[in-house]
Image 1 (tube, rainbow, N blue to C red):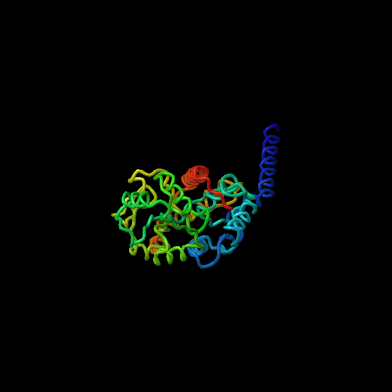
Image 2 (image 1 turned 90 degrees about the vertical axis):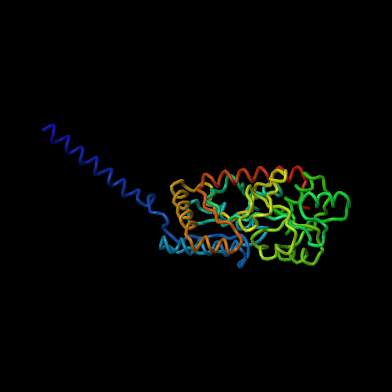
Length: 324
């Protein structure tokens, strides 16, 4: 009799657990359970937009779930960034951001915390910068350029594609470390900067290796950012090789989820991103843009984001850069 009662109690308990599991099923719904939005905080047509659409299409094909790209430009990317920072942390709203995300945190007051409010997924593409000099200058390398500028105080300039951009910060760092007085000349984007360099209005500029690749052979190339030489510019030494510090960070395009997104969702999204970035046709397209394919896991990208934020914050403080 006791065995019968025990068996009935056990079956009743198992039945209750099954019912609880069914009641809790919505919380365990397989991800993704609805369309995914890629928020691009810049206008359509640029490199960020092109890369986002390529990854979104591959993800849609693989997951058989709609993945749409929405451009939300404005305020240097902060409008789109903020949309994702404040979005539900369920993995269905994604930021396709760039390195400016962490540069801005020391330059302006933001409605979000770039470190705490986002979960880094992976870099999609990496874009080193190249320090280029006007072909009219009587120099052939960085040492000669430095000597020329020092011998002609107040006469030479360095361009950037806008205040607070990587090119601006890198130029300010060059002045600091090499004791130069290059005048900063900002332009509204990469295209006008390249035009000014080609027209001889600038002595030098840090140029984005990807968007400027076709134009670089027209200039005297003095160094590249990062820790390794570029495969397509093997004779151009890194700035680190030439004794300059804090030029290890490179420009990047990366994927982020809202910071409170559950780890299983972050890990699944990261694994899928890594898979996509190993596809030969994807790597081919990224390299054709003059970029280096990414593909780190979320832990590695998180370390890069934090390290880059620290380096740029130090440069901004040391060079006393403000956005007035």
